[in-house]
Amino acid sequence: MASDKVVVLSAAAFEDFLKAAPKPVLVDFWATWCGPCKSFAPVFAQVADEVDGLIFAKFDVDESREIAIKYGIRAIPTLKLFKKGAVVETIPAIFDKADFKAKALSLV
Image (cartoon, rainbow, N blue to C red; front, side, top):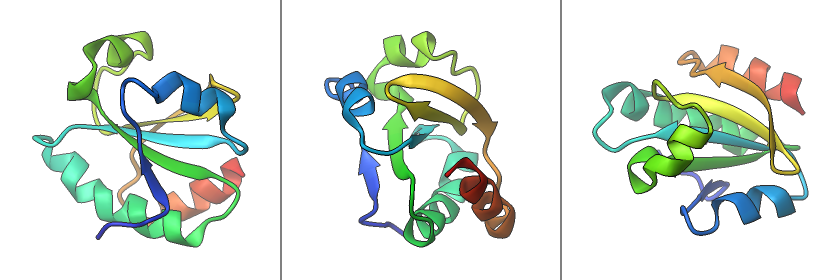
């Protein structure tokens, strides 16, 4: 299930987008070949549709190894909360929708 509220970040625009974002950005670092990432994707999209106050974004780690290394991505899916371009929290993926929604609401 896709959401029009989920921004797909490119490597070229990654840091500029995060620095200019008017709200905190919750980035899902993922990859197309990752089974757990595929399982988490619908939960991420559903919560993006239901929670205001955050920008929900996805970044495919295969697009830029440099960005994945810079932000310490060692396992996927991994979520990072950015404010004004800086990481303020790292969160493992939460596969239960209710639990993930509660966590997202606590970040607003």
